[in-house]
Image (cartoon, rainbow, N blue to C red; front, side, top):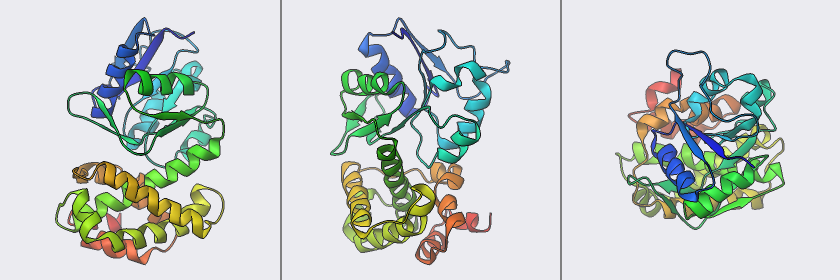
Length: 273
């Protein structure tokens, strides 16, 4: 049984809340905190050994850095909770079988988690460790699944949210999520459908059925309702451009998406990148 847990990116909002939840669980003898980038060494100075989970609570643009800084013999213990389609980059490093989670919650400024109507989902070797931290230590719902496709679908739905909603919030003048739901609900639905149909073959390896597109719209609306008072970070949307809007633009023609990006003061310059 693992008695050492490491959290990479523990200084971020999600990382801090996850670290607090892990310590509250009282299962681990040590909960090690590590910043995203190693300071003066090639590899992270990890405590514990093979079989101890390494929870990665960074943004998606740091994934390559985290892999490079993790000793090769410990990379199978990495646990990913980033937004985006990770199958490509993980497969390149022979890490397709590492533990993957999709977060459906919000991290609060006080270092706690707040759940909504949707449960987070996790699959892999350290899935039960991850779920126990969220459920028992963090007080939020998390489902363990034995089917990797469940995580793929959940990740695609979450990516649709993190691509569409921050874009609309910024393009409409820096408004909160509630404003988008109330005043641009039809635009949200159409944009989700356009991106879902265009990118499903790349994210899921197959075309999307109409009922699945309906489910994606319902997911985006449900998650939006859970975080309706928030104003998504436009800086994060820029930092993760290649994992969000840029990822969709590389996959297929999405004219409605391009139209909205051109209206976004913080993202429009990235259309030419």
